[in-house]
Length: 302
Ligand code: AMP
Image 1: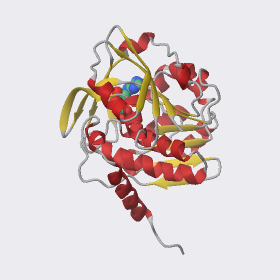
Image 2: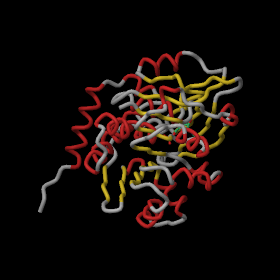
Image 3: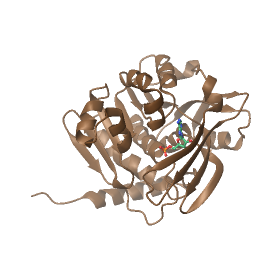
């Protein structure tokens, strides 16, 4: 099953303690699509400016990403500038320039409308809902967001969450959305907003998956080299949704395995700037790291 994704395609300027990238390829939909394309086909919905070069489009197409829903508008592509300190779990946003996203209204190509798996990647929640309304009968809808939208478009975000099966956000955002410091209580409050499953990304501390009945915990892969955490969350979501769409049987067991595939994919992205590591990645490396994850968490029962 293909996945339809709406999100940002961007140029990022990033500083980490290990280096700097100026106007490098980024964006939530870009990381998501590249990661998900290891598992299944992806149909992308986004907008770029007329300053956007051909090479990233050729790259995405070569990964099997359908760009029929990528519009080009006069003006500048979305730009994000962020900095990370030695605590790589926390991104400090320095600048957000929505540019062509400010006036963007997605119009889904006919071939996108029967999508069964939909991922609303981090973007204006009003746009997320506009896209969702054009999808005929989705089987599974998952969504991401960030502090920028929780602060700036809270009501629209809560409306979107009413239509979402799985919410994938980071720990600080769960607390901010719920106005609650305790993560377990905050998660219950967020589940009450609509999603049946909440996937909480905790950077180098891994992932917690909450639903009404259970909690699942997956570690992050212990890496020696971490250069740039940008895109880790979107890459996680790409592996997570990619596995669910490819197996087309979403249930508690497949969601757990999808969580590990998401963690595997994210662990590669942070090893280099921008999409550089994903561009070199092959499927054998994904499988090998998946096996390492299994070994990392295996222990005997009582
Ligand atoms: P993450 O996976 O959470 O590290 O997301 C990183 C990507 O999100 C970057 O490549 C940015 O271009 C993109 N981004 C940052 N801020 C926003 C925003 N407000 N809306 C949409 N995308 C954003």
